[in-house]
Length: 127
Image 1 (cartoon, rainbow, N blue to C red):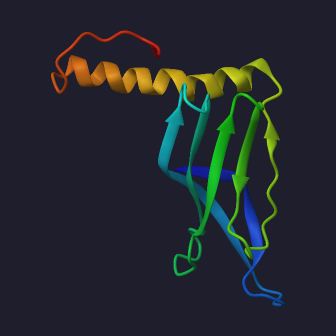
Image 2: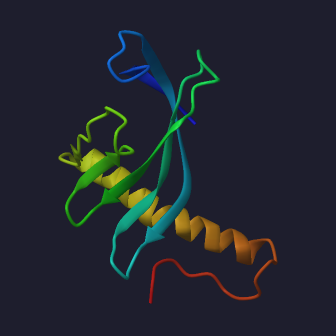
Image 3: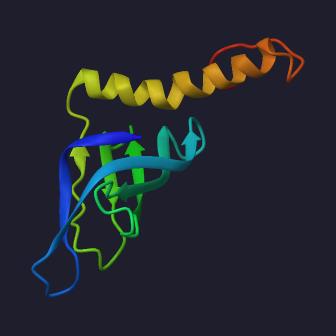
C-alpha cells in the first residue's frame, strides 16, 4: 500500500460542499505482459480514505506502458476524479517500469524453482 504525499480530495456527494480525502493507494490483480502485447503492467487500483473508513474505496485501473512510456490511473466513471497520464520521461522512471515488467516476473519464476515448487532450471527473460 502507498500513502500518498498529497491525498486525492473529492466531493463527498454530487453538488455537496463536504469533501473526502483519499490518502492510500493499493494495487490488486496485476497482470504483467512481457511479450504478448507488452511490455505493459495493468491491474486494479483502489483509493482509500483512512480518515473515513466507511467511505467506499474508489476502484480504478492502472497501466504502465513502456511502448508509450506512460503511467495511467483511470478512475471509475462518475467519481469526479480526472485521469492524468504521467509520462515516463526520464531514464529513472523508465528503468523503474522495466524493473516491474522484467525483474519482478524473473524473481517470481526463480523463487518457484529455488523453493522446489517447480522442477527445472531458471533462466532470465522470455523465449
